[in-house]
Length: 351
Image (cartoon, rainbow, N blue to C red; front, side, top):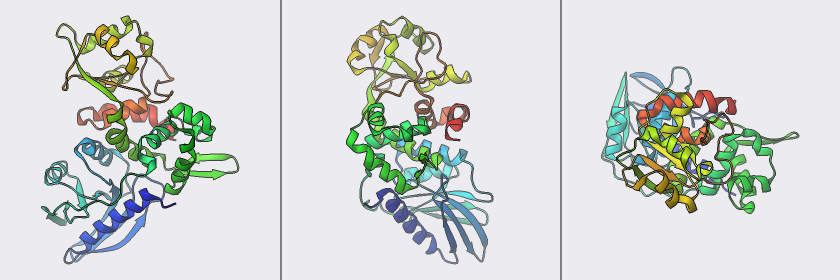
């Protein structure tokens, strides 16, 4: 079985390196592939002007939905010494190129668009047309795979659970587990030993899972965007949930959930994870009305492990910090709270 994810990433690296090699007086001395970290590798770019080291971040499809998340990852992930991040992707639109330039993110794509903007090398190539992408997502980053990876990132020891338990907890078909394990092994995120399975390169897997969650899984979970009725504010929502007849089935996340965990942000939005069969009843009890631009999003949970097993505010249920982190990390205004969630609740798990 071909590892489609690795194959696609290597095609993107090859295409982007071809673009850079075409620059007059510029050459790539070497490419070092990743050794289990969150990056695809490191290159040394040289010429008469001097030399520059870059670490490579591959994002197969850079869309507006994941752009802020990718920028956050590049700005916050620890990098090799004396290296700068270089974003590689299949295609970058003119609008996206402008956004990356404003955020001081250097990039290259397979179509020939390029931005290098650090002394002594300044290069900008734009307006190259979109190229047809080959192949779609492999199973690992489709909904079933994303649900299984979530379990492993939530609790890395769960890689040693039985297939039946994993299928039940993730809410996916039992027959899918074996193939997903094989793909994780081929990506280098899972190894076997005499004592069992072990999750490795978890930080890289988390970053790729975040992209898949935002672009693929979350849209399937979304039930409704809502606004609170004019007489109610977002700060009153926790009390409204406590008084609801089905409060035990509601899980709170997003900015409002994060504010209860970190106490360092003034939330403007909230996410409620609810049973779809209780949606109308809860909307009435929580004084929510449909609004495509509303501050409250209703999502349907998946599997059995979305609820956080740690501290909970009295009378409320918080969703697992992993889901809250995924939401905040793609929101530029919540980046500091996302980092705090990561350091307090996710990094200890991955370590």
